Image (tube, rainbow, N blue to C red):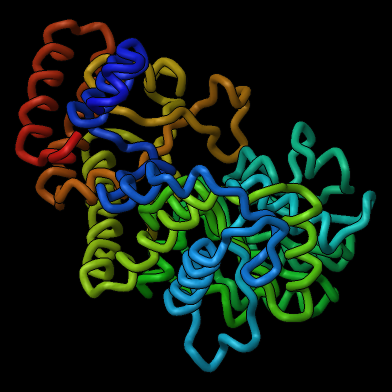
Length: 419
């Protein structure tokens, strides 16, 4: 950051502190990951200077021949990553959405009219704000129907979801979640949507890296539209991609531009292309396998050390701790762990009596630590440390010891050479 230090030392110093925080802490936030230095170079490139409203070959500005190449490459790699070549002709890909929420809004505005019914999982059970929560645009512009998990198992009950769908007849059904640790049966969702004449939207923002690596079920044989962000398990920049079957693609494209956005962020598109290229390499599958192994071991270790895990474990990259028996709220536990440089996020658990700002749970994920090279051994150590902090919240001695152990662990798995 030589130029930045000369131009604006204050900003440079704050960035340096944030880089140090990432390097010296254990990031267990399920929606976070570490993009490669190659991705970061593309993200920080002069492509940010270009305006390119429109789509490849149909721009509203001149000088876009190389931007077209970048966007077409990102589209091609996205198809390679998620679809067999025989299916390429049936899907179109839009890599321009700025992030997941605008991408979902684009899909809704393309395929729904104000007041149409949208069916998604309630936020407190693992869904996303944009899946129909009342404070979100999705709950304000559309009639929303919310399904949840079974009150005994905390698992999806597909019979009940079908029953609700038959009663409400939504135009879009959303599956794919932000805090549901078990496998989603996309085939069953496809059957439900077909039975009630609904469009099936799979929001795989959390799962896309696992799906690309073929270590988690794919929604593509059953969904009509698939949306994903490009960070999280995909390990790319902060952006989003919409895959739409040909029947819906033109409406979705028009909703993105000119409906909701102006010029795409071409530096982000380039960084996406780099991340997709990385995910197409054989090593990415090994990485995704390790993410799930790490999550399972972490969940088991936490259970063995006295913490309750929602659904008893995980099939993916994330897990939920139920803190109701510990005497701590999610907010309190999050703060305690942050004091020793372990970063998690407070999260609602199903049927949580507490509000989302201070809920009864913690959400943990393993993508970022797996990127650093940590494996099962480290997950056991980390699980033990988390439990020790939660069950000894007032012990300054334990906090000091664990902070030192966190420091030692991060030294063994360094992050970024050139930052």
